[in-house]
Length: 371
Image (tube, rainbow, N blue to C red; front, side):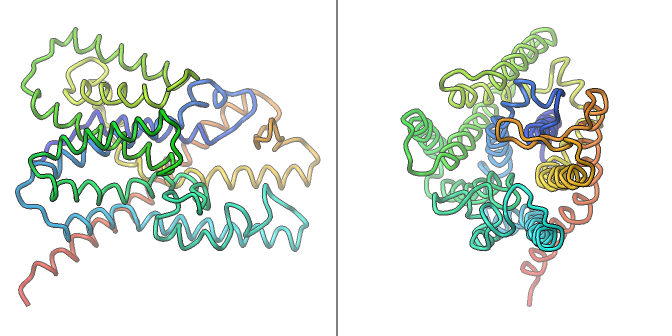
């Protein structure tokens, strides 16, 4: 049976929730804490985790099948991505109706800017984050990282075929070249591609080190101290604004993934509990659906603001906030949003993600069946 890294799954779920808070702005709440204002950096953590897990599944396999790889990876990402793209296109029609019939203009005019029709096809094919000619934040904004990750999968597969026993050198080379380009503020490839490639292949190298050193037996106390230290360092780097923060975080995230993959210390024992591993299972749905939930919340606040005249959706430093007018209800509102995102994710995971995974297995099974 393939090993499942439960603690790393839990980290994925917690990072997804942190990204939800990153995109949410509620007056006088912890959404404006330094950690959550910086938690967009956790996307690097996602890339490192993906590189680690994909390397675990494929890097040392003796039976590589491109068809199997492509079908499984595509049906893992595309079904929910397409559904959410359709949802955001419908939102644009909703904005159009609100403007024409109610004179209500949301943050931008319908079908302009991030919702421009010209962005639909790049989004559909998940290429919108790969070029400076398209907007990576268009429609369902979190999908920019899925755009990067999807095509990195195929670069990863190509390294397995082309470099074989030298693949670790290739991954190291790719990662360090991308980190160097980030440090030099190079404009090609685009920064998001540099971030994805550097972290994904650093995650692959981390898995290689783990596969060679997983015989190590960490003392429980030592492991617990290392886990606590790394967690504190992650919180500090995410909350900071130091120079080369992104570069430092790549190495820190790799060290964190490496130590936690042993699942020995106290924090690991906590993260292996079902409530956290379940969040890990839902992490892709949480990540892909939360922007829609926040859009609906902000839109409702703007409508109620126009009706009541109360400042329920104020602009602060060019950022749209929501507020009830009172701190405690605002804090409760944040938790309600998180709970709603998780609730919706139960259904999207069950009926969309799982459907895609079943469909992939059926297609591969038919392809393998004799004529």
